[in-house]
Length: 413
View 1 (cartoon, rainbow, N blue to C red):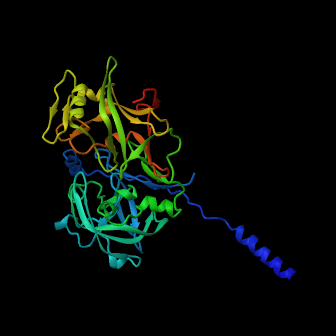
View 2 (cartoon, rainbow, N blue to C red):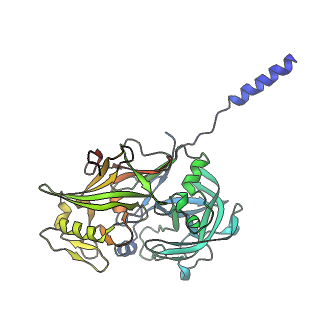
């Protein structure tokens, strides 16, 4: 009996001493793309997984490479915090139905891990465009190393919008967006919003399956020669973040007011109530309530002619590209009850010169129904999306000395 007891004890010691599996980080180098016609059209209308962004600086679209299926089929997907469903073109989606032939199309027969989901359709409408298809499940890997278990995704049979309108003849890098990587929350999926069962989008599923260490991801959009990336499971190190609570089923935050500040005066544009704005990597421009957009544009272009194109874009004198005036955006602090935080950006960073005619445009548009802070603003900050607490939160940190944030103010709204 003594011998048996000793053998059992030894076996337990060996099992408990085995190393545990922990997530490891991965960093993919930045890739860039410039699609000239797409740019012009857009102006009218610790431990972590780190995924590189593909960044067209003029367009400021951000995308990641994702591998789906067994063996892996690779896709370039727009990284979109404004939606929660990840979709790719099906083989049934043709140029005529919105999926150009040069895009990567998902082949169900080529994947041994593909699983069909019966009677589970997807119909989604974006700020610009729409898509129709159906859900399925398959294995997803990121960087060829981080493999997710069977993941609910969608394949699209019909699409309308910028992804459908990409032009192979005018693209200079031959890199195209195949579909959407929805980085939103479970309650923001179309399947759930249309009365179906809730499911975990890819990033949330990665955390629940213990494939990333923390319930957070962080986005840094490249500028100039800097490297852009998304970090899944951690924040970009070396930055001090300020946080506001996220609201609604998508990544949105309440905005209390905007402020325009010159060396001599300050104009405050305060909302009657906290107003949700999408903190949206899938949008380029800022979309502001129409009265605010008009007043802010007039304040910026003081003593100068302000033109508004049919598209809604404001045209200003290019002299304002040298402006030192500031625009501040205020949010309720999630860490200090009754306090506010703000992010601040120089006016010159909200103006871009159009290549086709040399006109200078403000990078915000008037809107009556959707209010968004998009990539033309977010590229100046590291943006953190934290879904670990009872209330998700969004954080900001400036990427250079020209941009600033303030932890909190003493005013109580």
